[in-house]
Amino acid sequence: SDLAEGKYTLLVQKAVAMMSGPDAGRFNALFSGEAPSASDVAEMRSLIEKSGAKDFCAAEVGRMVAEARAGIDKLAVGGGKEFLCGLCSLIGDISAIGISGRR
Image (tube, helix red, strand yellow):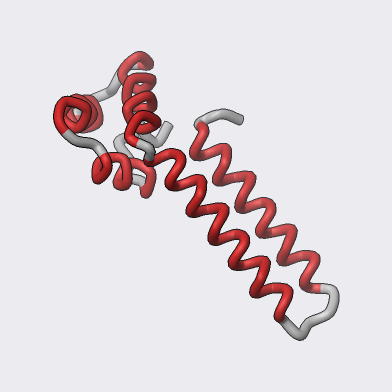
């Protein structure tokens, strides 16, 4: 839905930065067009995946969640740690859905 709405998300930003040549031109034409069709969105998703941006963003989310969990382990609090780790899991799950585009 973000692609169809023309939202310039981190994933789109990274994909544009990683694309070159014909892929970059095609993506920009599709992304900047009005009311992309379902096939346009599918093509943009394919170009994003081909660029490596999807894998980069998934790895970055995983890295940040792991960093947060390590920080939580160092906190001098009691029962709140389990709650915070649960939030980390939720963030990772939501990010995975957003990056894959599937629920």
